Each structure stands twice: as C-alpha cells, then as structure tokens.
Length: 224
Ligand code: DC
Image 1: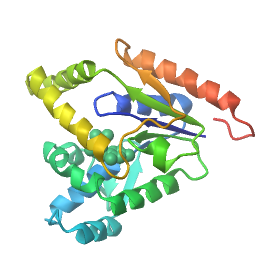
Image 2 (image 1 turned 90 degrees about the horizontal axis):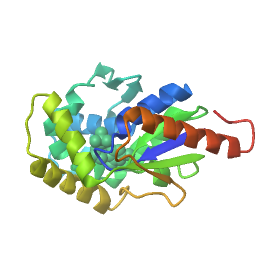
Image 3 (image 1 turned 90 degrees about the vertical axis):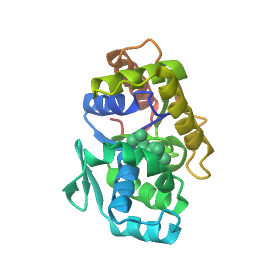
Image 4 (image 1 turned 120 degrees about the vertical axis):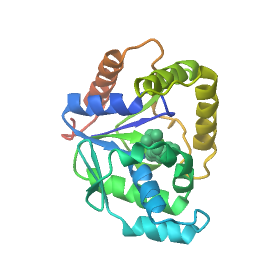
C-alpha cells in the first residue's frame, strides 16, 4: 500500500511522515531530498542554471539513493549538505524542470515497487502515485507554519523576525503553486489534515487512523 503525503513547506510533513512510516513499519521516501541532491550536484558541477539540457544530463548521470535517514549522492552521504541555505535559493531551477521531475518520479516509483511506503513531497498524490490507496494533504495556517519555522531557526541559533519568515514562506508557496509541472495541489481524493494546534504525536496518531481506515477499505490482500 502506498500512502502519499503532500503539502506546503513548513507544515511539518517530513517529521510526521517519517514517524508515520516507522509506526506502520514501512519504507519512507523523502522526495524533497532527491530534488535537493540534484541541486547540490549541480552546484558542485558549477552548472549554468539556464542550461536546461546540461541540467538534465547532470540529473541523468547521478545516482541518488535514500537509505533510512541518509541521502546518498553517488554513494556519498550528503544528508547534511543538502539542507544548507544555498540549496534552498537555487532549488527552483531543479524543481521547475519538467525533464528532471519526470526522471525523479521514475526513481520514486522504482524505489517503492512491490512494497508498502509513505512518500512525502508536493506531487506524490497527483503525479507520482495517482493510484495510491491513501492520500493525505497536510497543511497548517501560514501563521502557524511561519511560527514553527521561526522556532526551528531559533533552535539552530538563527534569530529571524516573524514577518521575514512569513515573506520567505509566501515566496516558496508561490513557487510551489505556480510551477508548470508538478505544482503543489491537493489531489481530489486526498484527505486534508490541518495541523494547527495539534502536537506532532497527535498528528501522527490521526494519520495512523486515516491509513488504517483506508487499508480496511482496500480490496485484496495488499494491505499494510
Ligand atoms: O520538502 P523540501 O523542502 O525538502 O523540498 C525541497 C524542494 O523540492 C522544494 O522547493 C519543493 C521541491 N519538491 C518538489 O517540487 N516536489 C517534490 N515531490 C518534493 C519537493
């Protein structure tokens, strides 16, 4: 069974999706990490961002593997490097590239073939796994998301005003929603979960219940 979790940045998807996969005892696919790994490879190759063909060739030539919490780029552990701020400032060149999206979707499907998995991203329920048995759209109000992000940054020693966090978030949302291919959208059959006022533990518990209900609705022997 495939469970897709899509939603905007800062909705707490990654942590919750990883915990959900652990609770269900299935694989977890952090698809954002794949886009980040391609962006890192491009920075290292000093790619010209306007060279769309070159970018696609580069994406075709690298191997990206997700192994538990590790992200491996050509077998090198880049889990820390892909979270650096310079990745965030160029990632739209990668995420907006239809050819790269196609290739990464192929890798995402191949990574979970024949298995149960929780996959997390922006286009998982719409494009990558349109037939998934359980689709979740996880979101929170802009204020709540910005507040959480501000706390995250503070934990990393960065003090940023809420207005600034909100402005950056609005820009990320705009890019995610206006992307020509793979834009952030709720699949018509996705269940929306708004996490304002909920703790992470409560969100995960709620998602477990949604998945169990979907699994019991599913015909055939393939449940979780
Ligand atoms: O979830 P994240 O912040 O790690 O994602 C990194 C970037 O990749 C973000 O700009 C959105 C993009 N992304 C995407 O376009 N499609 C996905 N399935 C996952 C992430």
